[in-house]
Image: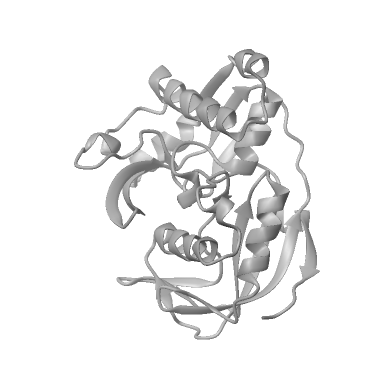
Length: 266
């Protein structure tokens, strides 16, 4: 299930860093820590995007000038999703960086058709290697066209699927097909224009700052339908609960795939 959360922006012109997922992760963690359901404190099976709106780039980051700002939040556990949204809409405003956001409404995205061959776009960077304390291995570059790239993401995906407890050992064993085929033309165009599809990004875990390498490029995934659906709803790679690895299906207009629900103000 994927939900678009709509906020009103109280202070137009406010800004956040270009990559501000760690700020959003802190807000989400705060909502869960101070909520009544302690069983969700270590729940990590969710995913979210960066903030979307009318922006202007400066040296400080992204300045938002639109009246509305949106955030895509995804989770295959409806009970958790409902709980998180309830906690969020209890807040009269949410502060992200120096942005003052007022939760206003929810738009549920309609389901998309996913098969065993899907073309995905990266809404947020995909992390292939996790970061560990006092170790630089999380910043290692792995070619998206290598088998290692697919193998690393296969291992992390199967581990996350197993952790949900929703798949049997037989089902997990049947999910052996998994191959990512990067859009070579896109990568060549990016490199030719001296831009990057792989960058170093910050994240925080237990108040410790880590750095990881994240990848953003289109690709085709060959995998079982259940695996594709899990990735679409829960993200791909490591640190999905910190805003990494959110994908969208190519050639799908997400704006047309939403149903708006009014929310009760705090």
